[in-house]
Image (cartoon, rainbow, N blue to C red):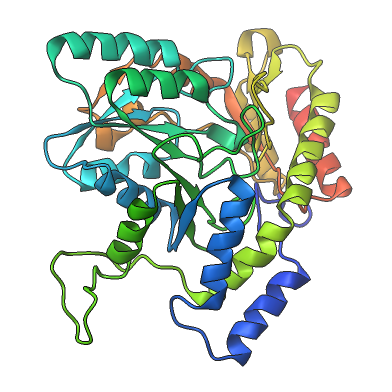
Length: 377
């Protein structure tokens, strides 16, 4: 039996500004890829995250694919990737002919463990087998420990690429994620804190890198009056219509972050005292957007397994999901090396994501809380 209107994990939250920008695109008949909204979206996004240059693209995955290619990743290379993440953080590595090496999480932020990374790279340095790059994921709206990761990557000459797909609006010591490494990528998928329905952004302080990315993303067309191609590229550029949605969404980012954080505080106040329930920590180095409110349930202390609660919520028409299944446990990466893994495995086994959209109403949130409490008891 289901009850009431479905409550989604993180649905789009669209306002009037987005409609006006889209209408402007239609009124001017500027529908095709590129256009004034794309240019403005890139500029406004740079101002928001403190990056020098940006390329608006068709997805966050496309942005990561280009970032890896521009870092020189190719056949036979190895790339370090956070294991506790979505598959799109790792799939472009394989698509470029390289091999992913997954790195465990640490409990302080649930993000990539700098100490495990440093220990592994010290061994590889002695062997003369250093990986080409590191894809450091900022998980569920929280930054990884960037000071440590930047220092380690610089020490060993590993290119740092920040996967900030889930962390737009977060801060690390007052700065935005995506602005620390060689480049950063963001996602505007339908479930992200801001959306363009589908889209992404590649940012960097390296102007030449972004210019190369734009060329590759536009089928690598050479500057000629005819169609000429000296290398193969991709059809990765964002449309003017979707960029219009993005501009409207970006203008309300701060309000959306405040709303997702309010969700977290309400959940915490209602559930944190339950035995065996612990929420994803907020690291001391920055602001967590709480894009998704995540918690863990210790079955021995709680007397109930995570799946029992999740299934009970689903039965009441409430979307709830386990924490990401680590990449090193995915069948498609069965042969990949993983540095550690036990922390990520534990978080996956016990972790639960609650409905967290910025347009979640007080009544909907209370429904989620009551469903959780009923299943817990």
